[in-house]
Amino acid sequence: MKQQIFNPYLPPYEYIPDGEPRVFGDRLYIFGSHDKFGGKWYCENDYVTWSAPLSDLSDWRYEGVIYTKEQDSRQGNLYAPDVVQGPDGRYYLYYSKDDTSVISVAVCNTPNGKYEYYGDVAYENGKLLGGDKNEYFMFDPSVLIDSGRIWLYSGSSKRGTTTKIKRNMAGCTVTELCADMKTVKATPKIVLKGSLGWHTNAYFEGPSARKIRDLYYIVYPVRNATGLHYATSRYPDRDFVHRGCIHSTSDTGINGHSLLKPAYPIGNSHGGLVKLNGEWYIFDHRMTNQMGFSRQGVAEKITISPDGSIAQVEATSCGLNGKPLKAEGAYPAYIACNLMGKGGFLKRRNTPYITQSGEDDEKTADFYVSGLKSGGTVGYKYFDFKNSKYEIAVTYRKGGGQLQIQLAENGSPVSTVYLDKADQWNTVTLPCSIPTGVHGIFFTYHGKGYTELLKFEIKEKNHG
Image 1 (cartoon, rainbow, N blue to C red):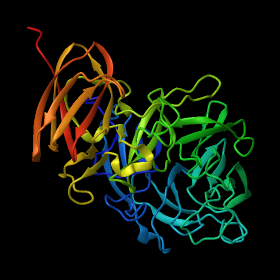
Image 2 (image 1 turned 180 degrees about the horizontal axis):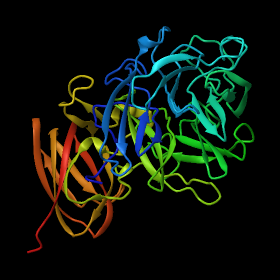
Image 3 (image 1 turned 45 degrees about the vertical axis):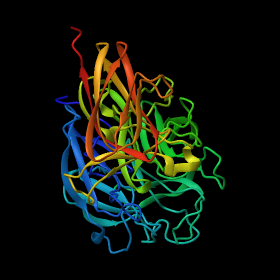
Image 4 (image 1 turned 180 degrees about the vertical axis):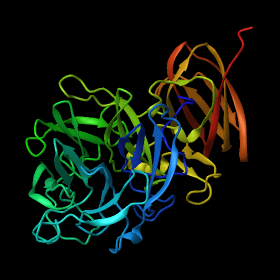
């Protein structure tokens, strides 16, 4: 890669959750919902896509708006989409709108062009799939084409929901489609059951289907908000078995973290798997701005074992970089992978958060960490330290307390500095002795009020 790449992998002014990663030709494309910074509800913006060459995953290119809310006559925001290349070579975008139980389809000759409305998924007689109260709820489509057969995965668990649509929310359904990509060939059936209760690993919503080797995978968020889990089967339409968690932006289930003690503010999840240059990655999203309506895409490298199992991976700042970051140069504060406050999930307003100045899509805004109160920690993982003597320059504002640096979440401080109160961005430098090797950088604040972090710079000191 020409340069390093972090989490979030897109520019910080871009809020694309529910990211479905797809490789077409020699490029990786991201198709997802489109949140608004400071939004009042999910997915307020139109669909856009970004792409990067497989030869350089740091070189992201904005492809523009590919589909607008106005192109579908129904009211409502555009929810989590998927895109596949059909048997005819064209690209098919599947989506649902807020407060509907309809899966609609748009089509384009290229993956990054202007999609045109194609129709709705319906039975041969024209009746809409999910169109009446006796049918399963259609929501968050994922499409898998395998050996000439086309499978549509969709649906939600039974839940308290704001939707006015009354349908059977029994879990994840699979529906076989005809070659025209929108006509029902075989009626839907449940492949992953939902649940009435929250304290379970049952299917929630947002399926993402893939075939890897001889197994079929469905990646999905679960009822208990512990992140993206997965189930596998030898068949595309039956016998799926839950096998565990792949990724949680809050690291719930690993490193001593739980729903009551998350490593990052908890929110919903949605994403999928993709193979890039011989390595597998999981794509997910994270919360920002103390809300669930301004979400950013993140990714992590995973390992798929010979038996098809996938161990849960940490949330890191590295993501698509595929290796630790260099322990040199300046890093923006918004690439934090851990944001922990005193009181955890039960006192979320005490938790630091990612935010920005200005309005949505304001590319020149400041993107920073705010709300770092006493006892709170902001963490970055990982960096490859080659030396032992460093200086870390931190740009902050507010302050009025001590800032300490650790190499691990609960590690001993390697340096401490007092932050004078400052209304404008100010920089302080902390000398650090750091053992050679791979370590995190964690900033913990102690004092009155709160502080904000804009960036930090790692400088290697001369031994002489």
